[in-house]
Length: 257
Image (cartoon, rainbow, N blue to C red; front, top):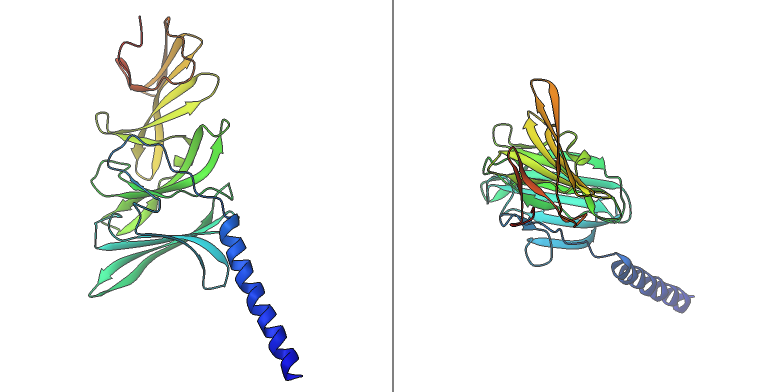
């Protein structure tokens, strides 16, 4: 009887070990973000402090990211963010340094619209000099439109504050010259969105749509939208992104003839 029990125990140990190994192998690698902002901190095995597959307090497998060198005030705050493997659930904790340790000051638990990708990024999204947090919410346009949830670091509240409706605008980056967020939506052509951060929300102020050799400009002024059209001979239907709407400026030289 004792030999049988030992044999069963060995089988269980081997089974558990095989399960953990297969779980690690089956998890898809998070896609690196394409971002032209050199101040970004891309979350991957090289740049982030720690990225690992682990088990949370409820013994559920999670992908965990940890950072204490970039978020908020470097070295004074620490963030731990987890995504339950192959589910929509995410959770993060923000800590403030206290002596030689860390004190929890914020805990957020919510969900995204996709199970496989997560891809957290730590970067400044509002130009205040403090690094904020964003992560993948869902993908549209056959993978070309990365919609992200953004949490801005508020130095007064000492918290990460959700930037409401930021997940409605794809491929966001902060544009210092205009003090706006710049979004880029890909479709049969492309649309550049110019967005103001007002309080805890994003407000659309202008769009420049490129479609079939024509630029369609929409600018919000005094509560009304002003529309313009510019015909061009430029033929690339996708890779046109604008850096200004008044005057019209694109991100590459010699585009229009």
